Structures are given as C-alpha cells and as structure tokens.
Length: 221
Image (spheres, rainbow, N blue to C red):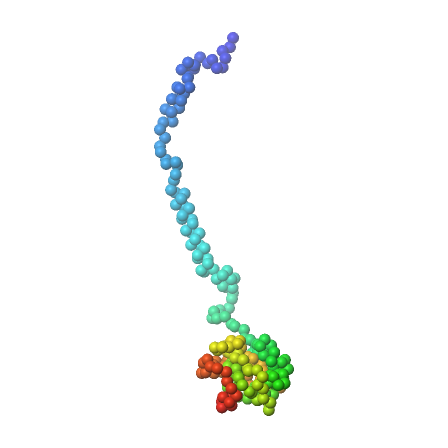
C-alpha cells in the first residue's frame, strides 16, 4: 500500500506546529528597517522643480510671445518703425455725425432752423464769418438775443457744447472742429475748414467761462 502524500516521512509532522512556523518566518524576515512609512523626499522635490519650470515657461511665453501674433516672427515681413498707423477720420463725416446727434433738433437737417425760435445756419454771417467768433459760439454757447440775417432770435440760448465747465455735451476739440467744418460746407456755405488746433488754442486761452452775449462776440476780430 502506498503512503499518502501528506504522510511524507521526510517531514517531522509533530514539529511543524503553527507556533514553530511563525517563529521560522520571523527569523527569516528579520527586523525590517524603519523607512518612516516609506516616505521619500525625492518625488516631492521633483514636483517642486517641475512646478517651477512650468511657472517660468508660462511667464516667459506671456512676456515674449508677442500675443502669439504670426507677424511678430515673420522672417519675410518688411521692417517697420513699430508705430501704429491711425486711420484719419474725414472731418465732414465726423462733423455730420455730431450735427445729427446734437444740432439737428434746433437747426434742422436743412440748416434753416425754425422761424422765430432757432436761427438758420445756411447763409449765416456767423457761420461764414470770423473763425474766432464761430468757435466761441459753439464751445461756450450764447445767451440773450442774437441777430442772424437781419432777424433777431431770443427764444432759446445756444448751449455750451465744448469741453468746458458747465458744458451740455462736453465735445472734444476735434469733434467741435469737425462739426464747424461740416456746417461751413453745407447748404451753400463756403467758409474755410476749422482745425482742432484752432479750437484748442481758443479753449486754452479762454479757459472756463460763462456763455457769450452778442455784444462780446461783435468785439472779436
């Protein structure tokens, strides 16, 4: 009769108790070194290094990328001075826009005004006459009676339009110049264009002041 597999005579069955097996395992394993929960600084250091590299790369690209504009790094582009060309606005186009936004209510699209209330601009001696008077009328306004083409108008004052204290519209010098140039070229008027420099010079000279009256305007050249 054959001997069962678990009855191998080479094994001392009586000595192979649970306690002896555990003791043998502990002896083989020995005392493991304390690795502080296997915590290592190297991965953490690498994390900080790569985070710093990413931050530096982002900062560098933001500063030197030229907003990712392909023209910045175009080797075939013609050299430039770096100045941005500003498209010039036609003063007549800008002037009409300002006129339609502010002046048209009183002086009408025809430039004829309203009889007995608002004076006409078409053929007006004030529009086609002295540059200094016309600029002051629009920048500072006029109060009291104003005679235009032999008719006196006193129903409503001319409001202050320029960029001065008490202005109803606070228009910049270039917009004032544009609207004056526009009315001098409309409805058969033939006065010369008004420049931004002319408006700025008068506004700088007069500063903030109250609206003019006709007598003051007539004393101007």
